[in-house]
Image (cartoon, rainbow, N blue to C red; front, side, top):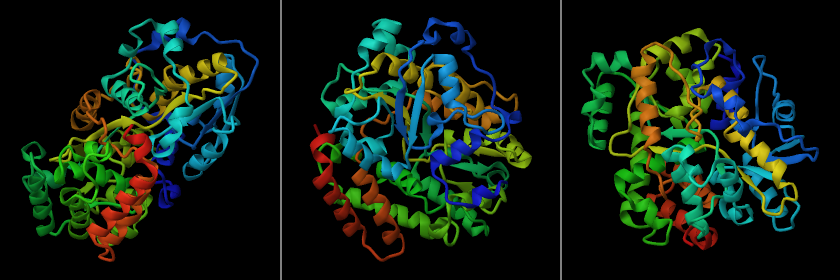
Length: 455
């Protein structure tokens, strides 16, 4: 494994590393090669530079086989537009947008993520006229159902249900743990027989009694947030949608129980010291078979490991591991990153060409090929490896991604996201009660979120 994995990684940084790894272990071919000659990809031949702001994520980079970022050059050659990128660490992107957008000094395009965008959707331009001119009135049918659900969610939040404010790029399915097939077989654990969260806990107890570590985890904020988004469906089914629309509160007893469930997982069934384990080290522990399952960025983000330069990891993901939906949850199918156009942009036509290149065009093709990541544009599909990977991992994930239900189940406000991820460590270590943690989350929602999430 690369020494970089021993450093703290963001989910997106980890995928970016996978994209820049050796290309010899690509996931497969694309089912949409004809797209490359479609008028959709005709270079715009526009001279004005298009500015793009985003964090260093998969769709704001475009690596060649040597790991060199070629995005600016490729956009110029293939879309006919000069691109100027300003890549900003994700925690800093929100403040930059907060300062620039009201003043009209922002970029032409922004790479979007719910964790960052928050109330900034109001500054985005509707894309309907561009998309209808490109593809006709039924253009949304070109995107997967999960991607359309995400686009519609933003429209709903904006109170403008007939308008679309971004195009989805790569998609994620989270909440599907990976496991060592040999451990489950040896201890007669059948994932298909686990239909409730109690069944899952019983399986964890079987592994623990046998002297194994049931699950590997880390301290990464995104992992804590993923746990919350999934286990809230166990503790309070359907309630996440309500509290983010002002119906009920995070302090309701069933919502509070989510904090207790996460604390139980960390204290009873994850490896000792999980809360002090960096994401890269968590991967190393799982790769070394120091735990039977892992819940660090699980689901489709793991497709990126197929381009990992470690032969043993490639072999294991294809043949030694399986995946299953965490019982009692619905999983979480969502856009990892998309692209929106700033309404104040004076360069919209050229910006549209770049937006297309990233989300549905050649840029998306590069990313899908290099990382195996699913994309929202239905014609950009990953191929197969001809190994047990297809049955053990790829097929169930891709099927679930196509039909994921996530409206108002993800964390829609960055302040709530931050409050959840900063209070959970206190609950896990017993320094903060679940009730107090929930009160802090509700306070963050009341102060900073309700005026736009519940609109």
